[in-house]
Length: 453
Ligand SMILES: Nc1nc2c(c(=O)[nH]1)N[C@H]1C(S)=C(S)[C@@H](COP(=O)(O)O)O[C@H]1N2
Ligand SMILES: [Mo]
Image 1: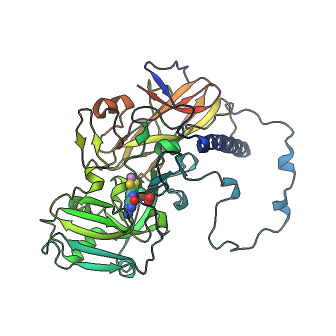
Image 2: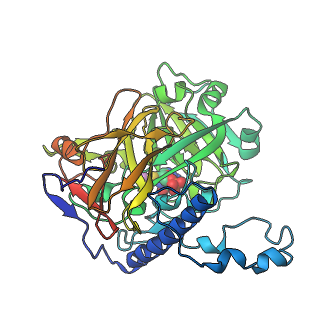
């Protein structure tokens, strides 16, 4: 790699003390030790496979570990089904979704972030799916839960209906992989660098295989007047009265469904058990959890969650409403903020890309602060409105450098730089920040969150 002087422009670094940092320092420490273990294991694996190259240093001589038979190679293991529902290894206890200390006033109206830096592939394990609740979560009894279909006037639906979960689960279902991203993801980073790790910059993002019934089928059963009824109101059963307008054209595309399944089992309570709306490509708030009612209407509903919240404050002081599609975005998850590169040499840069408009077409990675870009490998299958894993081989020369990823989708849209996004959107928004993320790799191997402006 050519030596790369820091690029022109001001470099902003994350403050040492992020919010109330007690929890976060812990994250740093854990991230570091986890990363060291990971690199050691990766190294051992490469040696075993005979894949060691000049870029990888030689192992310490005389390490007896491989010659000593451990207890687990000699004794009898544990019996089956000691735990009727399996759990991760005790060595993975650091891999957790985490709240951001000081971000919200209560733990009910709050968010926990998915540990993107610790995940492989594209699927988020259900127990690590990010959580966003406006008024706490519930474990709702599926036998008591109902879904009601109504119209804003008597002619909107020929047959208003109420479904039990059993009735819904008898209908033909679809299973599809989709990402869900909160509109506020990366929202702390609008004005300046605010948080240290990709768990906090991008962790209001998860991806699952969801299973459920296409909403179009339910509306057909109920005889919806979709000529007049161009909108739907979706309402949740929790105390937050979460209500969102869904344009009928999204429903007619066949993509929207009422889901009860997540990664092969029922939804987790935190994610809306027993029923949630899946609106692929649209910001998380429209994926109404504990879904209890859908109303067909002839105009947008301008509810509190779309008139006051989830609006974009533009530089001229106007608020933009209904900008609900999550635009094309990407982030490098390894190496990322809070991790440490132990030595120069080979690394596989890896990350996630997605677009609310369709498929990821291309991801470019820069290891010189955006001066030059190389196309990353996309791991298939590349699915629409789904996370796509990308990677790029990289040999780090031990010099400080800036690494970035930039995704483009199949509409031709290219993810903007922080500078480009701010030129249009200003710095005072909360929602819909899809700017290119920059990580600074320092000479001592520490990786931190920075912004180029
Ligand atoms: N009923 C209900 N639905 C809801 C919410 C809520 O608080 N109550 N939060 C919304 C928001 S803002 C987001 S980002 C997603 C989060 O989904 P998750 O908790 O499964 O990650 O759910 C949405 N649906
Ligand atoms: Mo959200």
